[in-house]
Length: 221
Image (cartoon, rainbow, N blue to C red; front, side, top):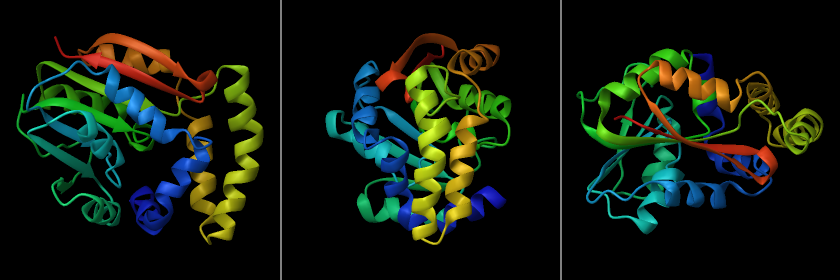
């Protein structure tokens, strides 16, 4: 509930926050992630923890999905998505209790949201349940830094710059939380292990810009 309240408070600044936390690279990363997904004609896409809808919009630029569902537990984040693209289907949802039928989704996208979920195990189980056989789950995320470049950025630079930006925007505590959520998250390999435990097959792990972010592609076989 506290995390939901926090995201509702920063909804107008969330896109700016992503630019700061990615050193301005998040747009290119979403594009790269969408290109790694195998093509599926008229796919039903769930943008889980979809926030302001940027991942769905990036996917739609190169594909022709039948439906893009943006699911997020923060209703004010979804209100921003609605203004960007009126064709998106918006559903307020908890990632650990997805209100969709079994085997109903072709592709699941998740951009920078998994580390904010209360139970990764429950979220993976739900994602596996709603995904069709042969479907894909693409995660774009800030994981616990392991490489020198990412350690320098998230352990030294980000804790100074991002909370300061938050202070200037009157939401310092929220921005500080988001930096800590990266440092306290798991590694890409640990994330992949949890996904496999839920039944997923790991297709690939790709580090972006020296490990500032990673793309993890999973399949439900």
